[in-house]
Length: 192
Image (tube, one colour):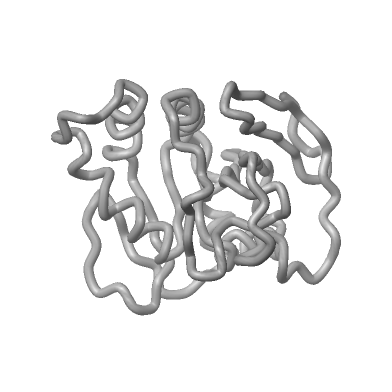
């Protein structure tokens, strides 16, 4: 069975975006791009909420033509661009970037995707979609990419959970920038 991995940058105080959707606190150096590239190479499907999708789709599909790109950014672009993607949105009319639109979230559809052979399903971006997956017991692994910042207010990743999650520590990775990636498995159901 495929696993769903939620991987997301987060502030030390638990926010995934500022009160006005600002992300200026996110470290985006080559070391972090290399980390996310390695994570994406284990996946063969990406799932987004609308806001995260629009942010990423506005840059990465054409980023490879930017002469200022670093090697880490180029590797990331070449990894993320060809992957199939799903975006949950009731407002988007058209999408590109190897993406299909889903209007409604049905947990049984996700269970069918998990049951198919293949790599990981990467869940990236958006508190609402992440919380829906978590509430329905669909996330197998949470990778919090903790940024060296506290912003005091914004969109909390775990703000709307209806019950506590039992998390089991799996691994950590430290970066020169002060970022720390922490991986937790839910209910200890996965082996390394």
